Image: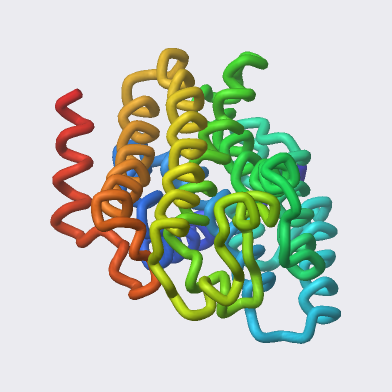
Length: 284
């Protein structure tokens, strides 16, 4: 892979770090604990994932979304990119030997969001989560390990990413509904007696709470399994992952404590509360 000029690389990294600080609601609190080179590389991965999300969730016609996502996938093979995000990502890929597959999987997940709005079963949902979030874990893993990692760590990193996406699904039910999507598996909606009309009306019923508790338990099981990754990381990478995973867990704790009332947009943690969670993580 051709290395861009140093000045361009510095400017590109500055841009992806700005994107991460502005857009990453939990991620940025974790990566600030990393050494600067690793922090910048993770920010480049995040900025790429953010671009995929922005295209998939945007207001463009589906055909244009797909064209832009395919262009992003093609850009991964460009050894002389002009865009800052791709310059930074290219440098990070070279330095840490980040594989192509998880980045391509992120694009595949974005394309899936333009084509599929319902998931029949948990298995189908988890396969989607592996693309849009497990792939982020796989892309970040070489950065944490300075280009080296074990296969079992890849499984844990993917599982951790899936866990965070499952928590997002709990948190973002109303937002996803407005985008025309229902990620909660259709067979589970039926089994718990929750209709899509209930979601549209924002009804918090005992049936809804039981369904969400079931989904939250799935997220917690994935989170516990994924956090086995911490055993293989160096101290600062371990603190980073523990911090942002702790923020997601705290978000789920709050949602659960409030009876899964996720329709009013009040489920996100405040900045002081996030700092308190990170501080607790630093103290072990």
